[in-house]
Length: 339
Ligand SMILES: Nc1ncnc2c1ncn2[C@@H]1O[C@H](COP(=O)(O)OP(=O)(O)OP(=O)(O)O)[C@@H](O)[C@H]1O
Ligand code: SF4
Ligand SMILES: [Mg+2]
Image (tube, rainbow, N blue to C red):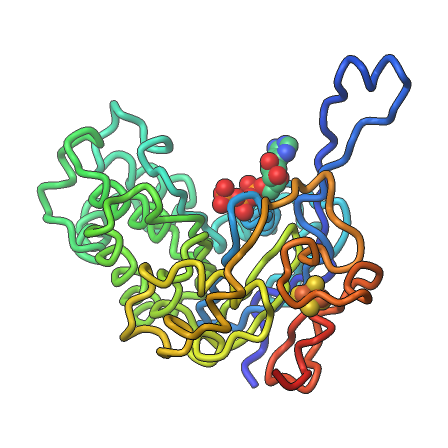
């Protein structure tokens, strides 16, 4: 088995919320929002892992903990065997270089006054990736890698479309020769027609450069072709994690089933088994009710108020994420039961 490049164990991140004036007067404590809750996962070198779930389920918070933009409250992160949370000085800078993030809106992180050459050259200089004389050639290589024309180097961000700007964002992440790219909703801001092109670029780069990729999205369709495995998150926890094609063909957790069933028109019939697109059982399982906030996570299985097959035990007992007669880990008391 390929050794894990990134290993996360029992990671949790909470955010204290503001009290209302009423709560403050009554001396109530500040409410705590549990954004990421006891998440464990490992990613092998060269693997592409999708992280999916509805808005607010903690995907970005998890990503930001992984690249150390947030300090988790508990848990461990190991990169190539090293304890990431204990890194300091040169070792931390080396880690910052090896793990790069691609954001939803590259425009926000591109200086509008800098040419693309200068933006890429800056990344190359900060981390001393190549000698100064080699920078122009490396910039040209990076542009070619993301399929932008050579003259893109002389232009400024406003001259580009959203898809092209995301290509620039990806080129800048690649400039420092990372081992891992954490892409947080990298195509959500783009037109649907452009999304596939950028997803294909990720696929191509991942295979060509042997990158390890964490592809985060609320849109299940997008991970179908670009990832080897998918982790499904619900209210801060992973509820199912398994190989992409098999999980799409036969999701085991009622929430994953609901996610797939809730978007039948979005999921092209050629991408998903017919039973998932039109099957009655799956349609019945479509997500019901409101997503509770992370500050009011239901007891037991957090999905129970929305789950179409919940039983009494679900209200009381938190299901652990383990294989239960299932081919991959699923956090559902009924996952191994016959349908
Ligand atoms: N800095 C913060 N302070 C307080 N609460 C936060 C902060 N960042 C995130 N949250 C809350 O944590 C929860 C998880 O948010 P997060 O952004 O990680 O979700 P997400 O899955 O990335 O959602 P989306 O699909 O909308 O990007 C949400 O309830 C969010 O409001
Ligand atoms: S544990 Fe119960 S409530 Fe949770 S997903 Fe499974 S059946 Fe539904
Ligand atoms: Mg997010």
